[in-house]
Amino acid sequence: MSALFAFFIVFFAIALVLPTVRVWRQTGINPVVLPRSDDVAGFVGTYFKLLIIFLGTYLLLGTLNVVRPIGPILLPDHASIVGWCLLTASIFWVVIAQFQMGISWRVGIDTETKTALIIHGLFQISRNPIFLGMMMQLVGLFLAQPDAITFAILLTGYVLISIQIRGEEQHLMNIHGMNYREYCAKVRRWI
Image (cartoon, rainbow, N blue to C red; front, side, top):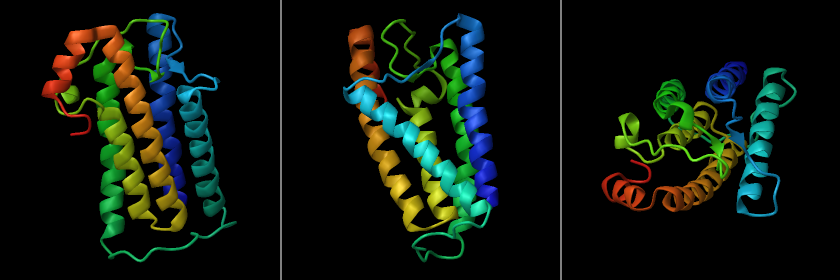
């Protein structure tokens, strides 16, 4: 579990901290816009934060041998190798997509700043390549450590990401109108 905790820290730093600092320095705008409101965006933002804290705590406690995998799930021996391949690929995938978004990258829905509609690079394959990379990470986590907790994290993450995607799609439709509608007709939500 210690390797998974190390991965979690590296992924968090590379996929959240570094792009946040990069966008903030380039624009003066904090790209992390997770509201503390009583609407859907506030709900998703709150539960994303709780999920990340729970996952980090679970992996840390496993690393310290305070807890063992809870409710192990038996998978073929090669599942762990596939899981680590997905975890590794997810870092590269997410970083490339964030780089391609440039200063338009946000965590949450930024209703204050109009950002460009990004349709090049990985965004020609998926309308949500960063979320696709996050799902790769969650599947990889489950395969690397198949237990009831990582499975619950995978399912919860999928639900939260799916809700967030729909909110972002509505926001982009409001901002970019027909351009976004045409983009949606050409490129699928996931892949």
